[in-house]
Image 1: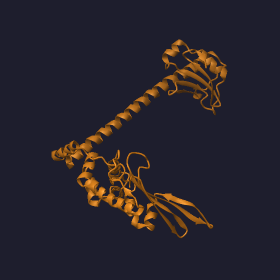
Image 2: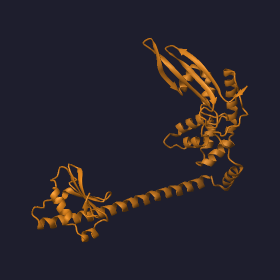
Image 3: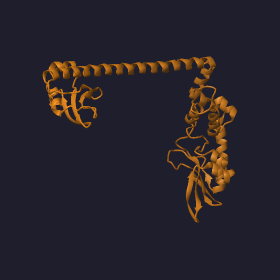
Image 4: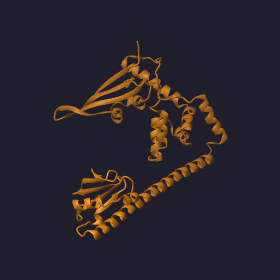
Length: 327
C-alpha cells in the first residue's frame, strides 16, 4: 500500500551517548508539500544516569556515526521533487549576500543548491533574480534534484518497508518553473546585450546614483526639519527670556532662572524646572508667568502651546493656551 508519510528511526549507542535518528518524508507542517527531514535526539550518561543532552539538526554528528545517511542530510528540507526550500529566493540571497566572503558564498550555494563550482560561477555571472532562476533551469539542476530524491526515496522505502506514493498531487512545491513567456523575455534580453558587462555596469551606476540621490535628499530634508525645529525652539525660548525679564522689572519677588526653562518642540511645551539641579522656579512664580501671557503673545507662539511646571522632574501643572486653564 502506498503512503505519503514515511518515517524511519535508527537507534544508536556509542560510549556514554545514546539516542535515535529520525528520517521523515511527509507533510508534517501541513503546508501543501512533503519534505525530507533528518533530526536526532541524544542522551548522555552523567554520574551513572542518562539525561537528555542534545538534538535537532546535528548533521555533523549524524554523519560521524552513520556516514551512509548523507543522502538524507543533503536533502534535509528539500521537497519530494528534491528542490531545496525556497530554492530561488534563498539561493539568490546566499549568492549575493555581501556580508559573506566569496569563498563562503560559494560554499553555501554549492551545498544549498547541490551544484558544482563551475555551476556556481554560471549562477553568479549576473546579479538578476530572474536570470538566476533561468540559469538554474538551463543548467538542469531541477532534473538532477529529481534524480537525487528518487534515489533517496528508494533508500527510505528499503529502510522503512513502505512504498512512497509518487503520484500524489501536492498543492505546492519548493520550486516553480519559469513560464515560456518569462524564458522568452530573458532570452530576448540576452540577445539584445541587456546582460552584457557594459550594460550591467551602466545599470549599476544609475542605480547607485539613484540610491545616493535618495540618501542626499533624505539628509537635506532631515536638516531642513531640524533647522525648522531649531528656529522654532529659539523663537519660543527668546520670547520666554524677554517675558521673564519684563516680569522681573515689574515685580521684584518674581525670581526665575531662564536657564531652567526649555521648549520641547516635539510635545509643544514650554517647561519650567526641567533641570533638577538648578535653582527651582516656585509654583507661585510659574502661575504669575502664565497669568501674564497675552493674546498678542499667543499670536507669536506655536498654536496650542502648553506651559508646564515640574518639581523633582515630575510634571505637576500644565497651562493650556487653548482654554487658558490649568490641567
